[in-house]
Image (cartoon, rainbow, N blue to C red; front, top):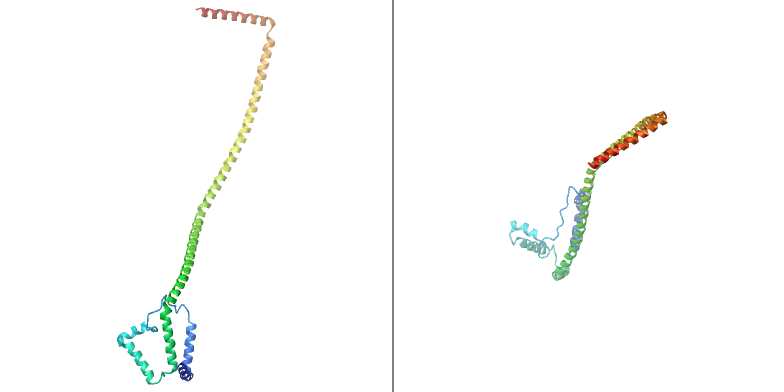
Length: 252
């Protein structure tokens, strides 16, 4: 049946050259279209609802307002009867083979479908969990990187304050060094002035000592032996008088 449809549609497509060119042009335009002009919709996690295993639910929803609840079934039955009556679709051995294969497929889907779906869902959940783990790890690393970047920015902002503090420290050190040098110069000048004062005082003291020694020597040389004897006798008499006066005071 399918081979007959291909053989029938082949000459028609050959004769319709403009239609084929339009199809090729449309396919090229779709392939070369920009992604920003045709955004892709998000991939659904689950398939849409179907009836009888292969018929989408959207078809029934679309026909309900026009044909009613039984409209889709009547439409499908009418199309099938029309194709059979007009021999568009001829019932032969391929039909029974397709029915048998379809029955086997439906039985397999009904029998093993839930287990296969559960296994596929499990694999999908594992993949999603791994992807989520990788995403969480990447998010954590990026959050840490953002925090580190913020810290570095904060440190860069505080660097100006650090430079100001260092400038102040350098200024204080220079001022301290200047004052230490001034103090050193003052001490050196004071030492030299003290040396000059001590030198002058030494000269004065030596002159005084020389003068005193000269006066004493002159006085000693000017005293005669007779004057020395009289002076000694005078000292002795004075000592005796002092002794008597002291003894009298003690007796009183």
